Amino acid sequence: MKGRTVALAITGSVAAYKAVEVARLCVKAGAKVLPLMTASAARFVGPVTLSGITGEPVAIDMWDPAYPGEMHVAIAARADVVAIVPATADVIARIAQGRADDVVTATVLCARAPVAIAPAMHPNMWSHPAVQRNVAEIARQGRTTFIGPVHGEVASGESGLGRMEEPARIFEALAALVAPRDLAGRRIVVTAGPTHEAIDPVRFLGNRSSGKMGFAIAARAASRGADVTLIAGPVALATPPGVSRVDVESAEEMQRAVDRALGDDLSRADALVMAAAVADFRPSAPSAIKIKKDAGAPAIALAKNPDILASVGARRSGARPVLVGFALETGDDATVLAYAKKKLTEKKVDLVVANAAHESLGHAASRVAIVAGEGAEPFSEGTKEALADRILDRLAALAARR
Ligand code: CTP
Image (cartoon, rainbow, N blue to C red; front, side, top):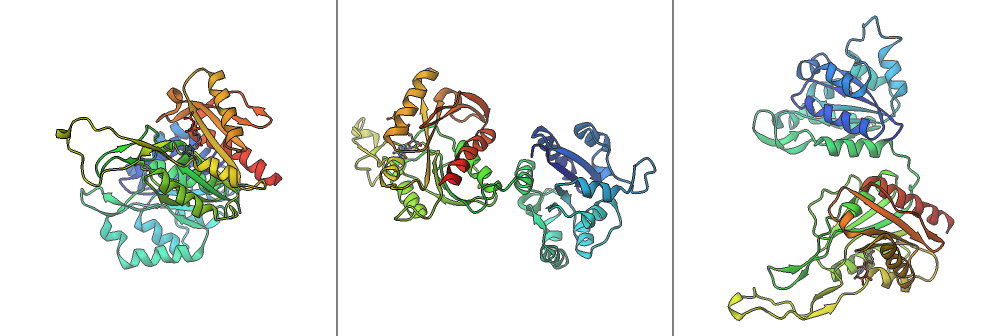
């Protein structure tokens, strides 16, 4: 999003207030936001709020004499994406027809950048054949991505398909549309989250991994054009747009999924990023029935799990796929780095992302050092999205050399 320009067009729906949050997320990510509104949108949300957040004048009236030049032409020329958030049934109909009767539809017609439409309306309206015909017509014209709608509660209090997608997801989808596509054609397998190792049908051994780092890597890689398979342990996270997801529970299931994704000769992927916190041990004989407490504290014998990353490292004969591991450790920076270097050589991988458990687990930001054969980058802090990009920059450079 950094340095990109988003033309954010708001139309007249109660969900208009959520467009303010989309604007804020874009601005926070370093984008320039050019706000546009239909006259009815201005009844739902104040233009002053939008100009306050974006630092830009709000384009509403195409006849505004104070506006230099043709409003829709100027906005369309600057936009890297035109986003209609929320989009009413009315604006969808007008776009389908190619009309240019206000600044929003005129900008859509004039723009050559991708257009993103986030519909918001009562489920009866969304499912109406006329609306569906208009949506199909817009899709047929190309260049347009629909973000949502989703199932959920709408303004009337009823539930159904028609609720606008959440602002954070809209932001992610817009970021994906404007991202540089330097990983186009690359196939990347990412693992994420913990594994759960069954004790009995009810209990498991697990760990505190949230999966956020692996999901951020998958999301960023997909945004940058990669073909991404995300193998996820049990986590409560939504699948990033454009990512194929395989859900697994245990380390052994994760290994099978990784083997399938890489292929027997490891030729199906250009890179494997093992961000999952794979359990090192599992109960060796999980009980088929629920263990009752009357029998006293059970002794749970453990067996070692396969080391997924090390087994791929050992099988790799050439330089493909690029292998990236994580080292989540406790201790000071020097201790964390020493463990990471040991993993780099023992697991025969290209990069190890070293981080300290207390600074990482479940947090939105992390402090990491990337360790490679030639040495380690110093520790630096950032959001998981920014770290994901740093890791992918290194991965892209390695993949290009091979
Ligand atoms: N990993 C794996 N399979 C396992 C365990 C770990 O593929 N059974 C991967 C992780 O996804 C991570 C890296 O190996 O990328 C480091 O994991 P870690 O558990 O820290 O490695 P260990 O060698 O188990 O470290 P330690 O013995 O210090 O716990």
